[in-house]
Amino acid sequence: ETGVTQTPRHLVMGMTNKKSLKCEQHLGHNAMYWYKQSAKKPLELMFVYNFKEQTENNSVPSRFSPECPNSSHLFLHLHTLQPEDSALYLCASSVRWGVSSYEQYFGPGTRLTVT
Amino acid sequence: TQLLEQSPQFLSIQEGENLTVYCNSSSVFSSLQWYRQEPGEGPVLLVTVVTGGEVKKLKRLTFQFGDARKDSSLHITAAQPGDTGLYLCAGARPNDYKLSFGAGTTVTVRA
Image 1 (spheres, rainbow over the protein chains, first blue to last red):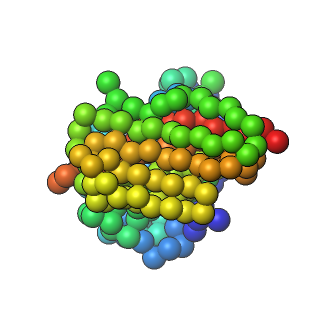
Image 2: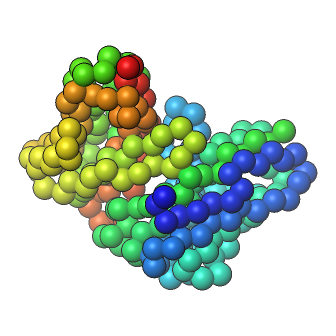
Image 3: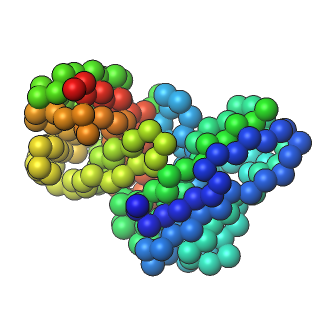
């Protein structure tokens, strides 16, 4: 238990569906991250939020839409995804964006399959 | 081209043997982290190294940061089945807060 929870753990969706991934951290951190993990590829940083403000968008397609209502919660809204978007989506948190962003705490991930 | 190259990609050993995993780059990093990820879970931070030449020990795990801060290694002594997992190195370049990850080394320790 790392203090970061993600729901759902598994999700299967069609290309025309709209779904959302949820992340919650109980560590009192102020920075939250979304990563994509595909087989045999390095983790890809998608978005970073620091004190609820988006600080990084790593050229992510607009079919992925993040939302951070407060420092403890992070959402990833999904719509009209493609099969190549199938992957493990990981949420992480750190004390804040900056030098302490090097030590990140990850949730268990959501295994997403797009059919 | 990946910023951090990990080798080997896969490693399967018998319980009690030793193993070493490598993480190499042509870039300098201000810090480097090692994570372990078990199937169905997210990565868990094992260690952070920040000083060139630094060696850190965590029970049977020994982590070393290269003198030039471009590479790192993870050595496991007397491996146990509980050491099985995907080992990831990650680094932050100077003046950059983003972590770059290697593709990982999958370690399997057979009982």
